[in-house]
Length: 156
Image (cartoon, rainbow, N blue to C red; front, side, top):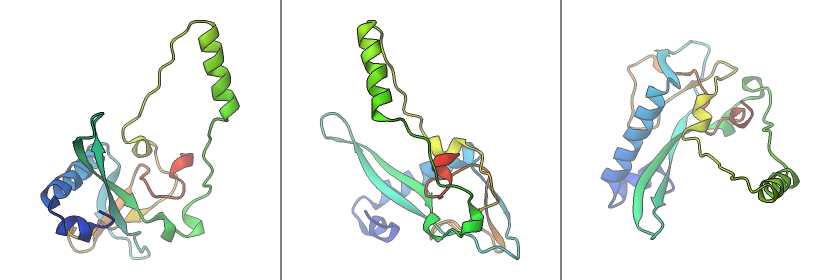
């Protein structure tokens, strides 16, 4: 589904809703945000879910995945300092693989679950939850750690 409304209307609506709950519990358990009183001078960024079906090696559905993302496209310039992220050049990676092959070494890689949610955030940012996840009146979410969708997330 391309939107939360589309997910709610789909035949798999219960599975998408469960995936949203799993995502929110994961980021809560990681200490990514706190529920706070909304400061008077703040307009929180909206957030939304993105959806993806994960499949196993045989093409069968293995998991329904929802990811909470901030609407970073609505951030103002004073809410972030840089959008630069360090990346490796292809020649560097090729050199490492060539040396490992020549020396008969084994290479490993890791996929860090929730990688963007492990970095402390460098500015004060507030979010509203997506529709259907209401907070008490006058409350919003204050980010403590980075979240997908923020302009500064890749560089943290």
